[in-house]
Image (tube, rainbow, N blue to C red):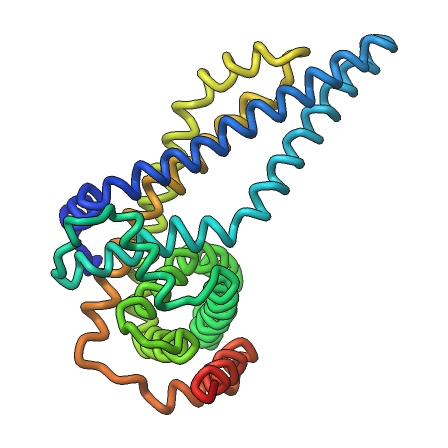
Length: 316
């Protein structure tokens, strides 16, 4: 079974209510942005479509809505560094304090306090973003190693099974990069590259335990997300009805975006809190194994880049 406490994770989320509220405001603000800009694009398309026949109008509405949707997606993509720096890393910083039993200060708000912690570990958002991207690359290499070991097992029908496992692991490992960031924040090291390197070696040493728990959480997270999507289909279709031209696929798309927002604002932080419990408990008393460090250096260019940056930061 799993090695985390659901009750404790929910309790920690309740104690970080300001960050949960911030997540809700940001991610549901994104949903509103998608609706407004997409409907505006569809409305413009509807107006332009008046210059032609019904087929031309239908195409104009679709293209206008699609342009609005893509513009919103592009703008939000450009915001990803800010969201990682202020929202995700800040929330992780507060969760680390609570998991380690340290009280939060009464004289300043959680969000301001967390921003101070993150700023002490990462000089600017670009550093955090660069560390996070390298971590994701190394995690993919470790997952590939686990898949490679399984591929040598003499089991009938293993190719089809491995395709399913490969897809499942790609989803499961998505929770773990933020756990690595939690380790960096927890160590209070002035060299985040070095801390990231140690975190990944410790993860590699305990990949089986981490992936087993991540697998359970993947089922929980996506089960809840699919349930939210199904519940939201009818209200989303009703809302899309008021978009000019009644964009046919809009209800499905809006329900999908709403489910993503609920997942990002509420379900993902729960999963990450659970994984932080597992990782901190599992690595207690352990040190990074030089053999694993050598193995990661050999198979991952991203890990070698982390080591290079750690050395540069140490001599700066």
